[in-house]
Each structure stands twice: as C-alpha cells, then as structure tokens.
Amino acid sequence: MGFYRRSCPAAESIVARTVRRAVSQNPGIGAGLIRLHFHDCFVRGCDGSVLLKSLPGGPKAERDHPANNPGLRGFNVISKAKRRIERICPNTVSCADILAFAARDSSQILGRINYPVPAGRRDGLVSSFNEVTPNLPSPRLTADQLIQNFARKGLSADEMVTLSGAHSIGRSRCSSFGTRAQDTTLDRNYAATLKATCPANGASDPTVAMDPATPNRLDNTYYAELRAGRGLLTTDQTLAESPATRGYVDVNARYGVAWAAKFGRAMVKMGSIDVLTGNHGEIRRRCSMIN
Image 1 (cartoon, rainbow, N blue to C red):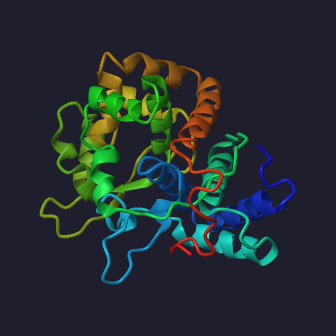
Image 2: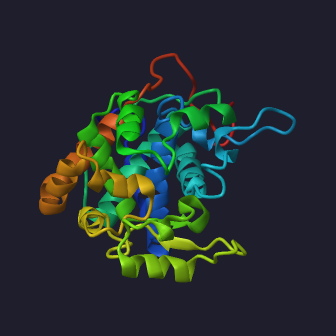
C-alpha cells in the first residue's frame, strides 16, 4: 500500500481524474477497464501484457485474440493516464499498476465500491496470443469448469461468483452468447428481447447490456437477475443453477453491502496474481510497447 507515496504521490489521483473524465463521457468505459484488468491478470499475471500491441512481422499479442479484439475497451484511458504521469514522474509508475488503479476507480464511480490497491507491479516483456485461450474462461463453461479455471489462479468458488458480479455492467456482442435466446432456461420475455435485438442471420453483431435491470450500475442486482432466469451468458446463468454455486448467488442477491465488500477484497486478490516485482520486468515508458 502507498508504494508511490514518495516517488510519485500524485499517481493515483491522476489515474482517478482520467478515469472519471472518461466514464462521465461513456459509462461503458468503466466496465471496460474492470474487464481489461481481469483479462490482464488471467494471462501471465497482472503485468500489463494485455496492453502490448503486436509488432509488425512478429507474433501476435494478447490484445489481438478474438476474446479481446474488438471487445476490450479502455486502452486509450490507460495510455492517457500514463502520459500524464510520465510528465511529472518519468520511469516510475508501471502500466500494470495504472490498470489496477483504473479498475478500482471504475468500481468506485459505478458502484461506490472503493478499496485500497497494493502497488509495485512491474510490466511484463511478453504478450502471447496463444496463451489467451488456455487461461481466459470461455463464455460457455459450466460452473464446475469455472471453479477449476479460477482455482488455477488461486481464487475460490465464492470469489469467482463474487467477481462475476462485474457483469452487472458492460455489454456483450450477440456473437458472444450465440443461440442463448433459444435456451429454455431463459426467462421468456428476456429471450424475446434477445431475439429481437440479435438478427438470426448474423447480418450484424449488435451489443446487449449484461444486466438489463441496472446496466450502468455495479451492484448485486445481477444476482437477482440470474435467479429470475435473465443471465446473458451461459457462464452467468450456470451460477444460479449449479448446486456448487447457487448458494453464493442467493447470498449475494440478498446482501448487497456484504457483496460489495467481498468484491473489493476479491479484486485485490485477483490483482496480485503472478505479479512481477523487484528487478523482474520493467517500467514501460509507453504502455503499448516494451522499452
């Protein structure tokens, strides 16, 4: 905690101002930044590898993988915050830390969920397209598969369900949930809405709010929607149907304040996955490329 208190005391406030300005113009950016942090941490750890661009003629980077492109948002916000910090504290604050701060600030703005973020992460030197699929959970996994996926990252089933509450905000493309509208477990009216939004012939690929009740507020309404059969992704709805996770969904739906506190703790734990510290990695001068 307070890693930059002496070396760059304005770092967190600069990130917060940058994020607040971006979210005020487009609330979806807040959801994008939380998701960007998650996608970063689950591949090679929280080292900013998801921010790196592919080099011409070289191997593809994480951000070009279909799981990230074109869905991931918030890259420009991180780059803007980095440029502002570099002007006053050059070669000091890592892009990985800026991303962790930005995810926290988004949680605070959209859900009044504030939590202290330990810092001192270093930026990674590698970003691999081929490492995304084995590490990121697919939107079609079962609850048991999700539990196993998160367990490999040191996160419990309860923490997995808690972090899934981030789907209370943001949007998903029709192609991401496929034939979900034909699923008989789905609420009938919600299924009709999805069918009307997503063309059956796939002529276009519009987006749908992850949480139809409070799409721009990070809250526990997401869990109530799951209980009512209105989970957009298969990985959402399975949480309310599987005996292994149903109890967590019920508790989170009932106790919003307790869920918010758990969410903050789970984000801190996720933000500590396989971090680089000390002399490992580097402090990038630009977040999209290694020094």
